[in-house]
View 1 (cartoon, rainbow, N blue to C red):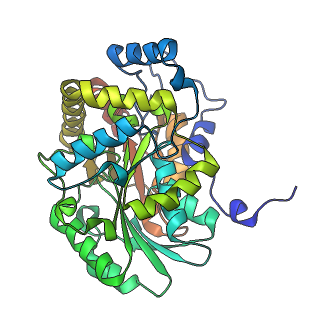
View 2 (view 1 turned 135 degrees about the vertical axis):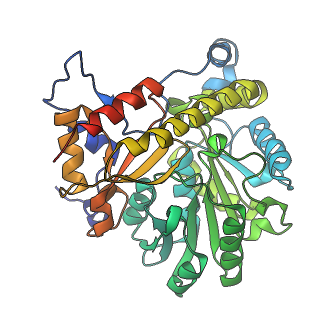
View 3 (view 1 turned 120 degrees about the vertical axis):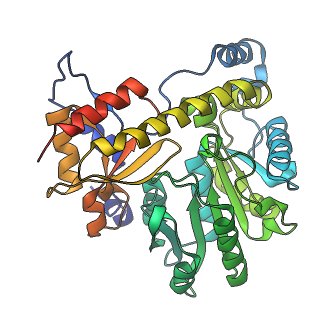
Length: 390
């Protein structure tokens, strides 16, 4: 079988790989599986949104047809209006594109920025799908080690820039680390990127679950933000629309003209029903989403309060859907993660999936995605980890 060597060198999808660890393992009723591997809601959208989708299926003929490549005009305008108000900046509808999920937004943005042999700077631990896309495109990923609180250092990033560097990527709140990047840190990266003629990609998939109030950064208040900034967003987490694949990109109109070429070739248009669901959610679910945020923040608090129960463990970061931790065992985290399935009925992801190959830090780290376990589930998680030794 002939295979593109770039694909052969790209790691398998980590969540799918982890699910294979469940094969042949039974989980007794008194100790059911605790799945803290995937950062996505498992419940369906709220009733009102599902009814809106049903109405669209039954009564909107256009919901079953191709639509504009860059998305429904009404949804683009709604994003522009809400973002302008929320960030205290000026964003127009022609600076918004709707995509088939946030991963596609990243792929589209990078496709307009970098080609084979170019370089992109990613802080570590990184979001594995970002690394996978760069690998498949032959773009070199330049790891930027993070410090206390898993925060990247702009000065360290500046030292990594070469003539082949095309972009710096930030994810805040962070996947996998949970860190919420301070506004002045995001601004410092923006100024660095602008001074060096690079793009700054800021993935804010989890912005709806940020513990802070107000705008998380002031970049959109800069009148020339579009010369440097590309912002990415996902509707999946906010409105439980994971299966409908709806994301967004905010960038310059000139950039989006190039993005349109990518989107037209790959998917022609974003999911029509998903877009209608996202639009209805933006217009009607503000109070409901505030409740979802409060619940996630309560779970975060439960993680932080309970973590001292784990002797020898260290909580490196916690926020959005994630706790990122260092374990105390001699066993490498990739082996430990497999063993936890069998010995403790816990499915989580090892730090090796978020770090450069061979990086010793990844062997000591684990990601716990707590979005789908409540306070009781978190208590059971800690109880099982307390009684586990390797």
